[in-house]
Amino acid sequence: MTAKEFLMQYRAVHREIEDLDRRMSQLRLKYAAPSVIEYSDMPKAHNTEHDLSDYIVKMDEMTNYMISKYTRLRGIEENIYMRVDRMSDQTERELLRWRYIDGLTWTQIAEKLGTVERNVYFIHGRALKHFPMD
Image (cartoon, rainbow, N blue to C red; front, top):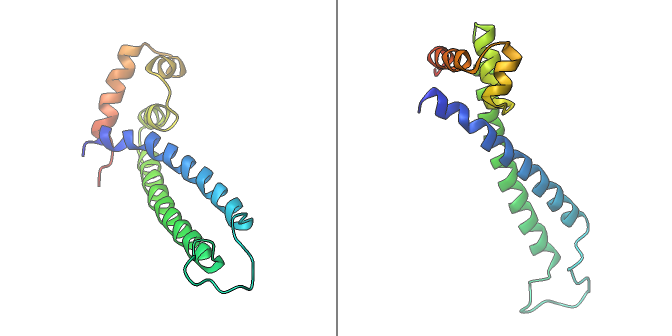
């Protein structure tokens, strides 16, 4: 994987984390107030679809899956951020952060750096060569 491909993961991973946050919130609400459960003392011979214990097991499975995925994605996101942050050249570091983490356009980056886009492309190429892929 090239440095550029590695950095380009950040925005997709970040969006997926935001989606998981939203889904986990929805799951917590659903878990806190199960409205489809039939609460009765009657034995459940064949219809376990509405059994409270089955419901809890399903919710736990979903929660564990989402937490596992969230942890893995957060690790990728943090790894990218820390590698950018380790770069010694401040301009290269800022450019990569603005482009891949903040999602700024080349024009916006040129304005922030007080230069022309052509120079931004040159700095970007240099930054990718210096990016720590270890």
